Image 1 (cartoon, rainbow, N blue to C red):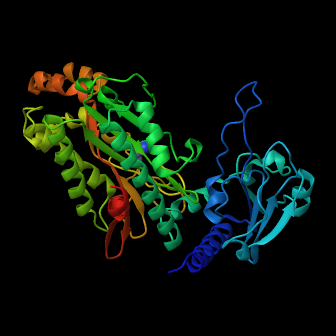
Image 2 (image 1 turned 180 degrees about the horizontal axis):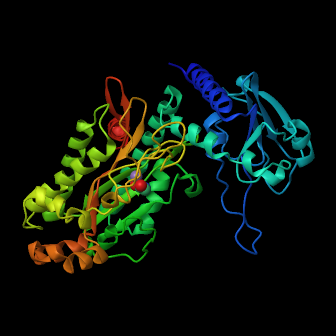
Image 3 (image 1 turned 180 degrees about the vertical axis):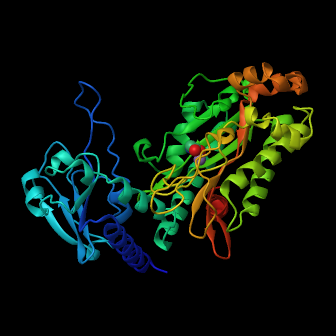
Length: 446
Ligand code: GLY
Ligand code: MN
Ligand code: MN
């Protein structure tokens, strides 16, 4: 299906969802603000601009601060398109592209013109964004009304075909970056070299990434969100492992992929292969109707088998999970929704009314517990980490006597292993967008 048609259906779906949500919440119209740049304290250099995800849900416009979308049940959406005259910064291009015909576009050159193009904030107008003061005076109940936002967030889990296509492309871009990063690592590159290789391979600016790259060589792999960038070159004998967690953006949609690489064959390479096999098995286990939390615990059990098989923990796999030992090696969640945000919203929403599922204290960092349904996009990212902090706590726990500490200590130099793919659930099966991305480029640059 071509992009025009996909987008046409996407907008039709969003119009329907928003009309229903507005009615349910007692509003006639909604102003969705792209937002504005912000700067560090006492600085006049702003952070890279990140658009309001509610805005980019409708529009592939990522660098259009101050623009406003007006949505109402009974009219075409109106886009107040801010295009200032500016010689300091490049103003947005004239509005053009596949999206334009779905909106009544009003050009605004100044804040005054934006205000003039907007409906007055009245009792039944809602606002979603982070700078309502720029658009008039709203009451507290009108700004990001919790019930309205919850309904939209609940529905955001169901991706349209347009969104699924964007996610697919975001995975393809990231796969290119990953292959280049892998080659840089195997060539002896530093963390900084590997990061630059990723950017070059993906063909992106750092500020276009959906999240900061995690490029972790050796023990750094034990830090789940490591954001350092070592730049001292190591001797080959000192290089052991790479965990790289890096994604890409396509028209506002994120991918989130992790690969782990051994510098040479041996025990770490075997662990990487084993985690990779369990990760693929977990993807194969995804079924519509199952709870994601169930998949999370199945992941624990699979990892527990590895902890036992690699003689790291001397307990039965079921006991390793039951006694909480697997949580020291895998202290995060198995996955999360992905889409407009890398950790997309709504993972605990039980229904459009905004009720939430309770948190399980045994899985406090799990971001997704909803039932698996068609059109959901989420990651599956099991891992085994040898974090000094976690291993220290394990050593002080009642299970300490069941750990093969010599083996654990030998693995610390590798940091850990994580394998992460982005998948989309369809009525007739699961699409692994990350592996498909790697496969698609295998002929050209693998
Ligand atoms: N890249 C962050 C995560 O995997 O959740
Ligand atoms: Mn992730
Ligand atoms: Mn990740």
